[in-house]
Amino acid sequence: MRPARIFTALGALLTVLCSPPPSAIGAGNPMTLVGTLAPWPAGQYSNVAADATRHVAYLGSYDDQGVAVIDTRDPANPILSDRLSTHITSELLTSDSADLDRVGRYLAVSHQTWSAPSAFEGISVYDIGTDPYHPSLLRRIAIPGGVHTVQIDPEVESGRPYAYANSEGNLKVTIVNILTGATLSQYASSEGIGCVPPPPYCQGFNFAHEGFIQRHPRSGRVLDYVSYWDSGLRIVDVTDPANPIEVGAFDYNFFTNGLTSGHYAAPTPSANWVYLEDEIGLLETGGVHVLDTSGCDGSSYCTPTLVGGWHINGHPVQGAALNALIHSGKFVPAIFAAFKRAFTFDAHNLDVRGENELLAANYAMGIRLIDTSNKTAPVEAAFYLPNANESDACKQGCGFNTRLTWGSYFGSDGRIYASDLGRGLFIVEERVRGAAHAAAPAGQSAYDPAGMSAGEGTRGSGSGVRLRAVPGEDFAFSLTTSREGPVRIAVYDIQGRLVSARDLGALPAGVHSVSLTPRALDGRSPSRGIYFAQVESGSGTATVKFVN
Image 1 (cartoon, rainbow, N blue to C red):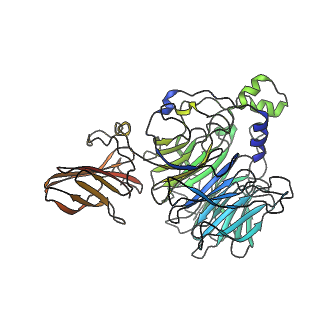
Image 2: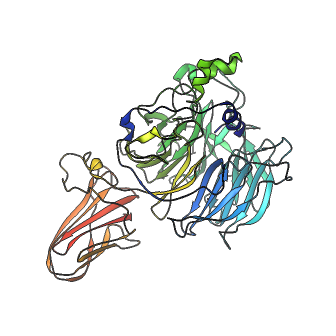
């Protein structure tokens, strides 16, 4: 996202207006709200980093109110347990906490100046291993130019104690050692410094906005997938953090391919695909591009191929006249009316689960779970709209700074943890309704999973029957029946597509172990993700949600 000053200035200048988009946006599978918390009044929240194992979430601020430490042991009733101050230099010289990342026992927080140019710029690193509800400060690392986003190396606890800081002030990525505080290197693409196209298409905003660190599963090289605002994706080999080397690029150039505003890149675990998101803000709305990166393993320079994409349908144009205002300096009623659509319908931060599930935070359009089994034509599988009735979609508070989902991420507990700029933390769960089942491929079972929901986590029960997913085993269950009778069990994915089914015949009353073999969907084996199992027997029916 652009600097916090944009939000402050526009918030003071404008009375936000909103009109509903087409009702088709409300179609699909709504997710279920589990719990929510706005830690303090008048918050302007940023990203969230959750640790479902430790039952805690860390919520940043796009102002100087600090980081909220949230106890999620009762996910339906999250509570504030601590606040990490960003009044670092002094009470008058304050910083923001625009981004956070958590890996293992470490939490990193990015800082840009908020109240004055002389406030602290850099990152703070906390140890959450001893007490996650009251993190202890490990060190602060100053980085001139400020840090908009930060990533911790996924192998931080196994020999790579590094953080990658992306700056909109110096336009570079700075690699630091979080244990010593030493700066190891800085890098930027040759196209990532300066502005190649003239205004208004390039607005001097071509910094390294976001990175995604992943060890390539075939080459073993550690790669940083960096999104540059005006020049696109850069793949950088950071195996040696002191000597980063650019090894791939997907170029943005508004005049040649119409692409602009690269914001967030996320590779799949295989590294064969990268999802690249745009935060355009004006005119068109930013969505997600699907890139084929199967030839990008770091061993030689590569050029990813664009194969598909996804974005919210039925949206109006954003801020159609705002660019004219910026460059003319004039303010007229028509331009005033256009302000309300700036940064309203863009996608924002992303998360990936397996090869075929993409989670997109989509500003006023909330949380969107995307099925990418078909990389050329991804489809929405489920959604959640903060503060909106699912039948009304975006009719409630969808204007600028009233509902802006910043980030949404898969938790290891099967839930989704999300942040909203005005409303704080949201915890939601996926569910399957009959509407999704209508999309099941021809030839597969018409067994209807309508009404399946998150229920009791990995356990489900009905009158006389109980079903439990066996932890650590794929598609394995413990089934308890109260009386003898025929039993059938079926497993569905989040879209309601049949993954596996088995008629067990007549079973006696008692406890039974059941395992199923998943079938391929669209030529692919089922990936890791949320599934629903439903059992029918003479004792009753039961449904269980589980993570494969």
